Every structure is written in C-alpha cells, then in structure tokens.
Image (cartoon, rainbow, N blue to C red):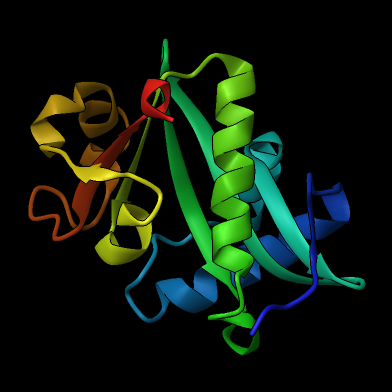
Length: 157
C-alpha cells in the first residue's frame, strides 16, 4: 500500500504539527521529544510529507560536522505507516545531503532493518564524537543509549 503524498520543506505553520507527530512517538520511547520552540529553531532541517493539507510525516537532516549529517526525528502518522512515507522522507533527506556535499549520513535508531534497506551499516557510536559530545550528553538515555548507530557513505550510492 502506498499513500500518495508530497514531500517538501515545511512552513512555519507546520512546526506545531511536526512537534506533535514527533512527540507522539516520543511518548512510546521511540524518539527523543522536540518542543515546538526546538522545531521552529530547526525548521530548515526538516522535510515533511503531506497528504492533501494534512502533515503525515517528517524527518530532519541535521549537518553535524564537515561532511557528516544525521537523519533525525523521522516520524510517520500511525494511519500512514507501511505506505512508503518513511522511505520517501529518507530518500528526500539523502538527496538533500548529496546536494549539500555531505558524504556520510548516520542515524541512531531502533529500526535497523528499515535503514539497512538504504545501505546504512551498523557503526560504533564512539566513532561519532561530534554527535556524542554535542547532543548525546544532553539525552536522558546517556550514557546508556540503547539505539543503534548506522552510517551510510554517500559515495557508495
């Protein structure tokens, strides 16, 4: 099943909807929470999937350091899952990464099989010091993170 949707960049009106979508998954322990303020401050990192006027998915591509980027806050509305929305968002983020000159993209995830389909491979978290010391030290799960780090070399694509 595929949900016809449009993938693009959000508007400021989308910020509260992005936060709500991410926080719905955060309550289940699947993502880190994002305040509406945090989403507004990082709005340019986000891409969104819309079905008509309804926001049904989001993902953020965050430039971490030099040629390193992270896909974070990938969330799809419950009634739109398993319909290709997450896949479309990841592909959009990877295209954006390539346009920015990012050579490596990583994720911290519980969904290893999903990201493996794009070519992401398991990667030691310790090999991502910019992420660990910039973001992870502020995470409630630090230092006992149970997510898996995965990395994709865009030159492999």
